[in-house]
Image 1 (cartoon, rainbow, N blue to C red):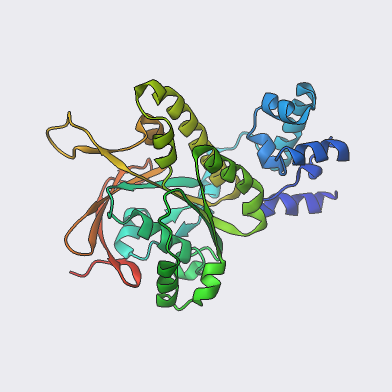
Image 2: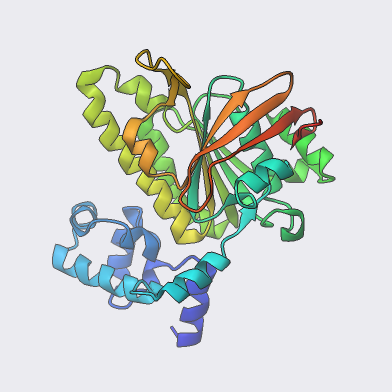
Length: 326
């Protein structure tokens, strides 16, 4: 492959394993059969794991991964280079100016944004709205991209997508064609879907990945304290999988989460997000949603290293997420 073609391939986001120096066709076939279809899927995997799945010796795999890192430009960067990269981060409007302002301009790419709250607080409504808004051109607050919607609880409603798209002047049929929906039936299925996304996302111009909700299967399958460590370990692996996806392909990842009551809290808010320390540390932005009067909801930034703590009020209308009327 010529240097110019190689550069274009890297910049487009998807680099096939066949483009990595040192990989012959037989190796490429083994890697692709095991699910390692792009350079990124190799870079974020452990050499032992790749070797076990493909039968390629660990030493050879280590060399391949090293070549993949070089090809993708994974190296030390200056703070100035990091700043330049941050300037290229995209943002998706929520539909509410107040909420966008709270989030520093909208939901960011290259990170995980978590919306958590009790039933009816607006988590799924926000996911639907973002899945439509990502399709808008940048001048209207979108990324001219498509969305993947991973539904773990059966809460996805095409009727809302249709209404939200129509309210924005989009063709509802086309808007629905631009959202790839899949139901995840258990935690293993949920994780395997995300594995597939490492090749699916760059090939299909996906700019937003939604997981609604991220914890429900893990919580149901690993009940009680005796399964807590195993559950947290698996959930941690899943969240890092999503984070790698966000960083690798400059996409926004939005996850929703449930809350549980804390009987030991007597002052302040007695609810906390499910998932414990694992979910407290991985997402880049955590937003607590609460019901208010009528169709109003309150969003509060709980944790985000680049955002000040604050609150915003928004409304859920027939047309979608909007600013709350005074």
